[in-house]
Image (cartoon, rainbow, N blue to C red; front, side, top):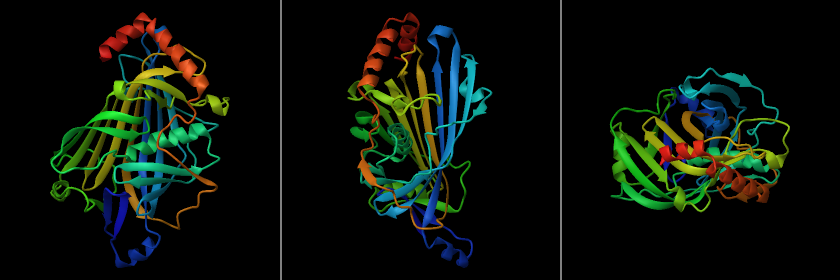
Length: 347
């Protein structure tokens, strides 16, 4: 049987081991995506110290109709660490922390697609604004942003991403049998590009190759450069103060499709703004999502209470106060010699 992974783009062919297993699929398939958010920021005022945070979670999705996925998150695991900059966050010793007010919950939402990618989300009207921003930042990893065109492997386009409408340099590459996104994937399915896509790319998957989509954004040509930054989870903040934003300096996305895998990774760097106006250094955010498994759904997709449609853009909580604090943070950085030297290295 076939299960849609990304409407208009990608589907999976399931291979049940026994004929009796077909009855388990009466409600269709449920996809499990692993979600990993790595965060790091340097502290200008404290020398060489770097603060790291990792949020790991799972996103569950199933097909609602030909143009929509019904999804929800599981409970995340959060780890924190502090290191000096002769190491990296990946090699630091982390410790888990408890979150009193989690940015992820099990409330259902829908992702609606058109031929270019995500068109909008359907969520409950009562969802807190900062939780909605977190949701958009993660599910944007399931957004291509353009249609595959015959004969075009490198081009410029305008992407409707969670950053807003942003100019980007796009590449569609192919490679051989080194499958970087299949290490932890269950092997009960294989990927198929839908018939509307270019025949050459479908042949690549059939020949056990992989398709790589690279998107490099041009911050100067993005009208909404402040982007959502997950920050470091705390409690004791009201809804208007949850979350952090940063002025984007660079951002790139890499999506990989192989016969038995799908993954998407976005790395963004920028100047953060904190709600208390504290002076922190350059920040880096990496959001990774990859398809782990496709298993039988146990029931019908849940109903969203009091549903409302919203665009993929974040910043629903980017209010006048936040904009004022961002301008203040940028002025502080512009007058900080240490940050100027960091920024020159990034250019």
